Length: 356
Ligand code: PLP
Ligand code: COI
Image (cartoon, rainbow, N blue to C red):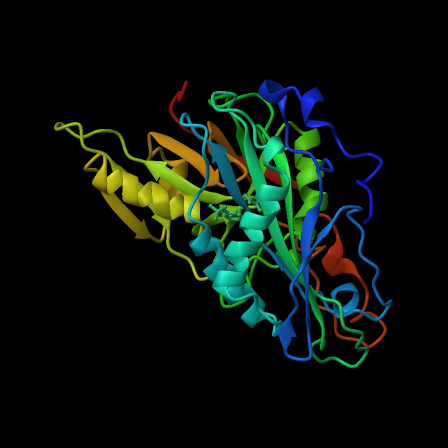
């Protein structure tokens, strides 16, 4: 039997109250292979390594999707997973949209259980504010150079103990940035599924935004650039100020290009059933946010939990001078790269009320 990864973290050494959100090696992750039309029995992968053919479709055509969910240690000592069946169903949807073999719901649930049981000592203790983050993912491992789906897939469930995603603590003021000329997902594209390709394009702009003091990127709809879609990591949720009866409205965008967040769905349910608030899932114009239509705005998702957003800055392109906005007509100039030129931008700022 393979021994544990040499850099496996010993649970006895973990500072549970100060966990961030980083990859650490635990006892192992579980791995299943889909071949000849069926999933195998799976195994515990103690060295955290997979060997791939250089022509695996994940490396060329991006056949890859993932999920994110959490397990919590409760007061009674038991470990409970938050709504895993919803993640199982969303993963099936993601796999289908990428023409990949999908782990059936029962397999997904038993794989999650197996990964947690093998790593039970890594579930943060009750009261530490930590959780076990569960990252199931599927990718095309079959070799294929022509553009067609792989004939083999790998499904892995990785677990890590986590604390806060955004450093600074729950409630720390967070600034979001809407980049000029950067879309996340097309109106009828892949934004609603959790495929790796939706995330890679925001890596660079997120790093650049962080250097300027922003925590997260927010995207508007890609067709009209008018309505709020979602954050790079999470959904957008907002609350109106209480009315004379103390009643608020929980507002979240309805969009064909935003991920259907399980956290957001749960918050909608809580808002209505627990607090008796109104719930509106509708188009949310940027102008409504900018002009102070909401008392509170937050990013919500499994990793980011509910991160309050105190300011949103939108980059707006400065109009080009007529000299620079020429139409290209001759064949030597129509292919030049002027369209990629960086434009000067100015900021349109939405301040949300103090949420401390
Ligand atoms: N939107 C995006 C782009 C995400 O990556 C996530 C995280 O999974 C979410 C929203 C929130 O979804 P969930 O609440 O299911 O974690
Ligand atoms: C999650 O919240 O589970 C995600 O997958 C978001 C990711 C950006 C960490």
